[in-house]
Length: 267
Image (tube, rainbow, N blue to C red):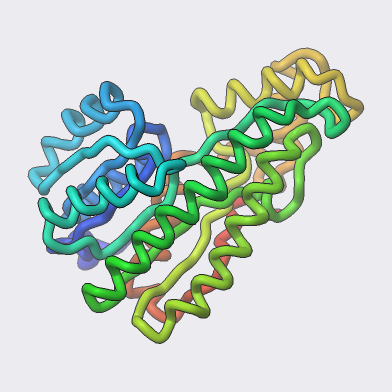
């Protein structure tokens, strides 16, 4: 980001679902540092309050509302509260998600498969629809849906998560066509190995526990196996994910819609 673009989001507002999580927080920091007001939506009100406190030093408007993305009524209420407070939302980062358990296909639990789909597909749809309605009424804007490299090249032992993220990419491509006439851009972001952090540690531990031919039984060895599968031979950072969101929301990407930005370290 050049010095002249430091406050390129000044006077704008971004709404972030999953705002209490690591990626939501990093993205909130990225936009607040560049002058944007931030609205956080999340189930975890305690963690969300902590994020709000951490964002105060940016001296931009920060709001937070409870939201269960699996409930259409909860999403509608949260959007209503956000719009009442902020008047206009310019950007929506449709980020809330759930990774699910790690298991081979023939042993994948039905209840967890349903939970992943409820959050990562139905929840994304609820937010996407509410965002589209608001942006159409307010004259346009940008939506970024959180997909995953798992939705591009399905990883072993993550059947539900891969299915859900393939669905997010498909929804993004269709919504981009449907909403382009109203000045609404819709893109997706597909991070691969991002860390360190809770999600990275969880992934390596659970892959190690599955007992498949693809990964060792020692999580420390799994870490190296995964990192060595990436051409850049390192993890991506939360800041790099936030930078990807910022690019897709920015004027520099004003001609881009229906695109999936795959952050994979060179794959």
